[in-house]
Image 1 (cartoon, rainbow, N blue to C red):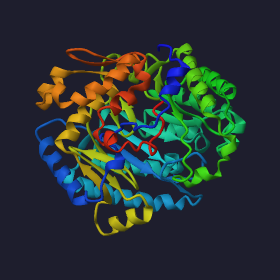
Image 2 (cartoon, helix red, strand yellow):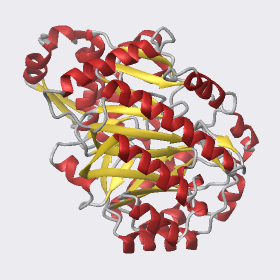
Image 3 (tube, rainbow, N blue to C red):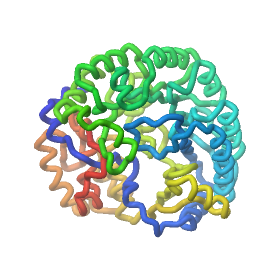
Image 4 (cartoon, rainbow, N blue to C red):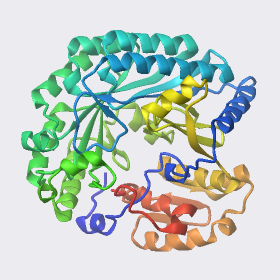
Amino acid sequence: MCAVSPDLLRRFDLNGPRYTSYPTADRFVDAFTAEDYVQAMKLRRSAAASMNMPLSLYVHIPFCESLCYYCACNKIVTKHHERAEEYLRYLSREVDLHTAHLGTGQVISQLHLGGGTPTFLSDDELRGLMLMLRRSFNFAPGGEYAIEVDPRTVDAKRLAVLAELGFNRLSFGVQDFDPMVQKSVHRVQPAEQVFALVESARQLGFDSINIDLIYGLPMQTPESFDRTLAQVALLRPDRVALYAYAHLPERFKPQRRIITAELPTGTAKISMLSRSLAAFEKAGYVYIGMDHFALPNDALAVAKRQGRLHRNFQGYSTQPDCDLIALGVSAIGRVGATYSQNAKTIEAYYDLLDQGRLPVVRGLALTRDDLVRRVVIMSLMCQGQLQFESIELALLIDFKSYFAKELEALDELMGQGLVTVNASGIEVTAQGWFFVRAVAMVFDRYLQADRNRSKFSKII
């Protein structure tokens, strides 16, 4: 990783999309219905008959036993574990509706269980869920099968069950090791517990272990976060995701419990980020892009070196770009040239399935311009470069004419050393990788039209 000055970090302390999709989810419309989604699945099924087209699966488990004050996820806080049994019955109905249109035995190359807290489910419930999925889909050998884990909900025996069920990647939500910070956000988990779990996961042979961190939380200081970074360096997970906390209490009710006066200043947040980048470099991590870091031998770092990075709603991935079937309340999927999202409340989700309908309530059918810009943005976000000729041949456009205004807008980023533009293409510099979202934003037609960026997270 190259050095990034605090001054440049301050200059790009801006809001912008994460580009897990283009167009972004805030552009979805209610006019896109379940019938539109069904049509997209039918088109996929006819195309898949003549092509080897694997799928990704995302399953949203919304339940959590306790409330983390910083959380902006779609969740249901409850200690009533019997609610999971009912939810799994409805998930099974949703799977059946999908296979009615896609056919059974579709090949799955990637599975992600997110939440909420997927490990809210008991061992038997996780077994039942995986059995149900395997009956309907064909899980490919060598695929990526990941689950998000709250360290407070598992022990070594539970991790062994996850390995037995075929999960080969774990993501532990840590956020910060400092006890005062943990108490301030209502998520107390001793560092010793996390260290023991990671050691158990290694002994069980999981391919990759990720740790999530958040900077900008209440009671954090650059010095306290330095101590967390030092502990992460000792823990040495395969991957680290470092997120900036966005305090939006008007949008996310749990954040109203955070004491605003305890939040670090903007200057302190920039210092935390700058020191984090230096700490990860010193510890030998490769900067993947945005907020992701990985050890050099991790599959994500290898994919970056080989130009094989991809991006979906779960972030960077090594799996080839493919359709994503999303199951569960609020889940977002992609099939062909469409995006879709399920009902956001569990009551609406259940009601639609009780009617025998897919629970899709909004989405988007992409225009030709959307598809062109998606290719450009994902090329920049994943490969950090694009060749004009390749884009022109694939999409039948004259790049310099089509994107004349955007190329002009890149001049400022070129002057700051973030990109280079020549006769053959665009390339993000080593320093520009830290601000790749700002580069991609230049090509976002919707963002340039309304300039309303406050709804997005910080780009660094």
